[in-house]
Length: 209
Ligand SMILES: Cc1cc2nc3c(=O)[nH]c(=O)nc-3n(C[C@H](O)[C@H](O)[C@H](O)COP(=O)(O)O)c2cc1C
Image 1 (cartoon, rainbow, N blue to C red):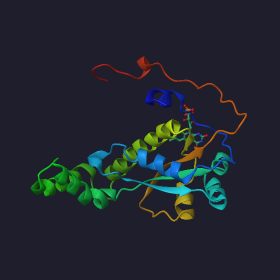
Image 2 (tube, rainbow, N blue to C red):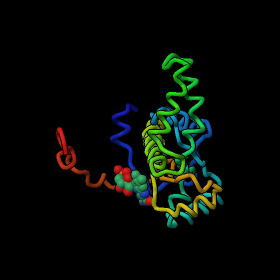
Image 3 (cartoon, rainbow, N blue to C red):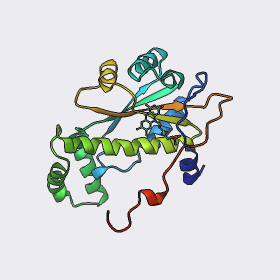
Image 4 (cartoon, helix red, strand yellow):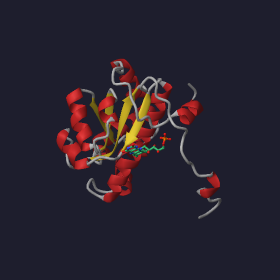
């Protein structure tokens, strides 16, 4: 499937086939391709908790307003935005840039200073924005890639974040912007037509606000 078709045909699917699992290799391919998403300074501040076992999905459903799709989808990914990935990944990222010729090795310290100024201290609101916006790009890439791989998805933020963190042992300093159900549509289900989208004139402002 080409990228434009994937974007046009992606839908949030409410009814998953609970009897059709996603092969491990396909799930790995999906996550690997999505990992090519762009990120601020290439710092990739996302992590993912893969929820697959029936008992785990039941617990996740309880944190997610009892939405049945959480239990019916074969896999639910908990997207985790990790503010400290800036520190965690910076050295590897700069080494890679230096090795590949993007920067001179002696510039590494300058770049460390730039990222600190741009993205704030690990517990700042600036850093939370950094982590969430990049994780959202990863999540969107994943939903489009899933479509290309023949899978359906459903992003969700109707959940109690503290409950998910507690149940899945996600540290307090992380942020869960969304969870994504993945799987195959339940046989016999026909989706309603795609709902309202604004005309682009309603939100595009030419030149300035
Ligand atoms: C961040 C985010 C959170 C969402 N949370 C929920 C949710 O908790 N439950 C739900 O049924 N749909 C949820 N949705 C799905 C939206 O309702 C859906 O994307 C929207 O109605 C447009 O439909 P479409 O995705 O089929 O184009 C969410 C979507 C996004 C992007």
